[in-house]
Length: 422
Image (cartoon, rainbow, N blue to C red; front, side):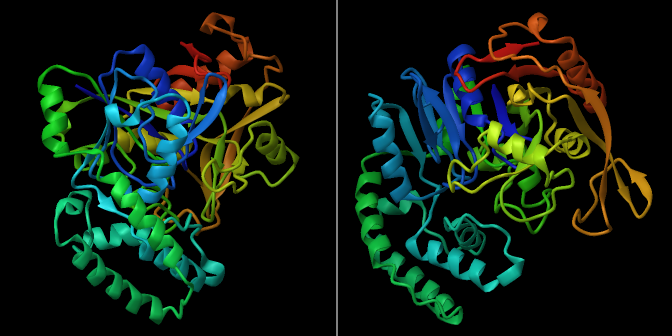
């Protein structure tokens, strides 16, 4: 059996904490990342200390859990090495329970250079890339040029690397990009030696054998549904399928193996980088949400754009993912607000619409809001649903009815166990 945890907005929904909580409390045997790369930033608080995971599954701090980096991920060996060093500082033997699929594609130094060169060339039309080399790596994957983790075991790896590097250099020359990446390459080859020490497995057989033995798998997504390369706000999206369908291609499992799909949404909404954001607040309330919620990218440090929750987009995300339960995070950030708003429709060309259009950034789209009274109480110490303020229950009840999917968990603080079960 496979359950899925993924983001329903534009990423940064708090997936790391939730995966960590579920791994601890619901007897999962395997935690598996199925897509994305080091642009992910899954924040955990372990023994009161903050750590951000970029590629390692968020079950790594549980010694009895197997953690798998699946074939749908694009892997930066240099970032992984640094990440493992950070994990080791917590006393975790990461080599004991971290496995990597041999089909996982590698991010090369020239992929990072291409990412930067491409973004620089766009001028005012930048898409907001994190410049981690993720897009160019996925392009090489679909172009059948990429190098994979399993290739590290081949004697021809260096030759294959040089061929791909030369191809990339021609592209960089076209961009007139001439920055020195020798330091990147030096770090890269050091990290490859480190990577060779891991348990590199045939991921699809590995995980299906676990499933056949009755073990429970939790598939961990990165980014969010509105950044999906097919269904997100294209072209301001990531380069992978962030939705539940990506679990099948990113791990090599069949659709009927998936049971629960846990979708995570903040109690409000944020976005990093460029692209349409209908409910964005460019006022004092937006600034309050940013500062109170510490809304700065855990990977890039960039300030996040903040706004009210968008139920039209959220309903769309629930539909395409087949969400069975919703987890609301950062509810405590709304504690001091007198009034809350939710977007329950879009006004396009003077007409109200209840669907996500082909292109959000065209047609003069405006959000239609419904207002709610804020609870104006500190909920961080609440441990059960009955203890939540009446106004908050009204807010949650409206979401349940509108979305047709129940909000089952509410995160009311950053702590590992600050999670109220409805």
